Length: 87
Image (cartoon, rainbow, N blue to C red; front, side, top):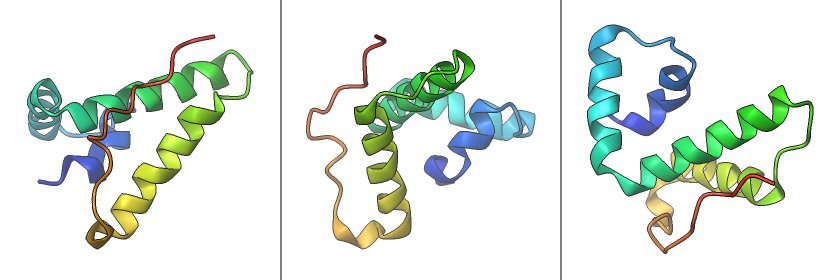
């Protein structure tokens, strides 16, 4: 299973129980996906506060989307980038 493809559904509580357990187990071990979860949560929290999400969170989300669209272009996600911090 490619967790990246179901990550948003998982975070929105829209996956079945088996998929949710698999994703949760994967997130415990995968730094890349863990960073993406942090980005998604930061954006969701910003929108809930009616604020614009941090530019770096949006940029990271766009970059992650590009890796889904073009997986053959390489993976810079483990280059040490940190999740955005709350303002």
